Length: 82
View 1 (tube, helix red, strand yellow):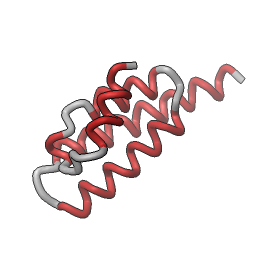
View 2: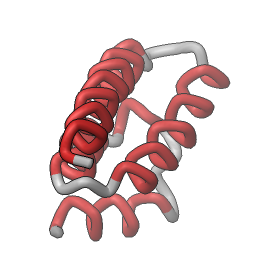
View 3: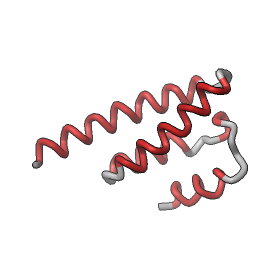
View 4: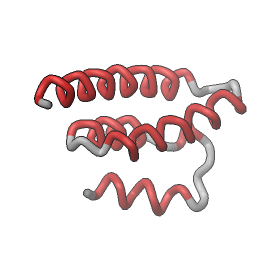
């Protein structure tokens, strides 16, 4: 998955959430393919960074809220199949 590799490379030096344009797409992709634990880990990391900076991270907060919603939907679907 190209988004995952982009995320890994940029993680080494891009700590500013506003520069991480791929984050929302990556989280949604991870959720869509059922990698909920990895999505959750990414959500937690970037939510901490957004909260610590408390600036220019509104897009990130919206992205993480949307991704949390998608994750909840995926978990419901998984339970329904079981």
